[in-house]
Image (cartoon, rainbow, N blue to C red; front, side, top):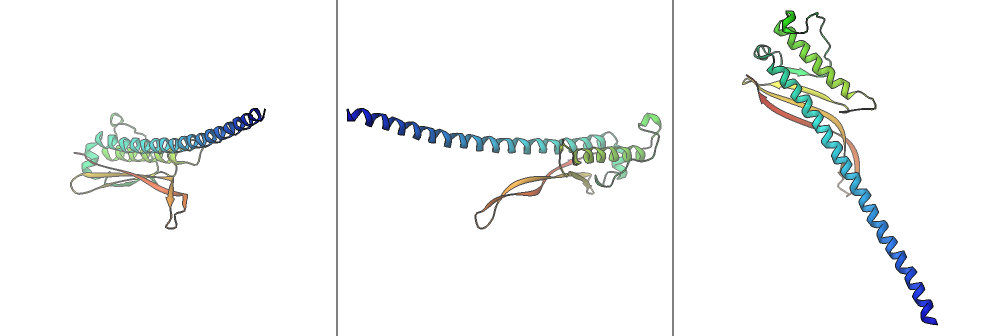
Length: 173
């Protein structure tokens, strides 16, 4: 009769240990899911930066005379405004300077619209620059706000706001 009671108590202990192991496993899966979502979001932001870079590169390739004239040599997305002009294409009689100004303003407007403080921040705090050297090597740099895990000298890991950067170099002739 004593053996019967001992078996019942032992089974309850086994169930409690199994539930504890299951709970620890589920916490691990939840942590893995969170890290996976962070990395997916980081990849999404980087793809947005690549799209921004490709956009200005295509605009430059479509207007090689303005590239040769140096219109794209040192531009920033911040502070650009749309020029006052009625022409929008070369067919409308736009000069290469007017087309370049329109392209730069539209590019900056796109960056500013995806950087705004809104619910769909596609690239929060975004800014971009285009720099050229004497050999027509253009460096397009896109920066945006992100949060990263940083470990201090004391071994304390915290999440801090930092800037991420994507940079591409291209030769346009």
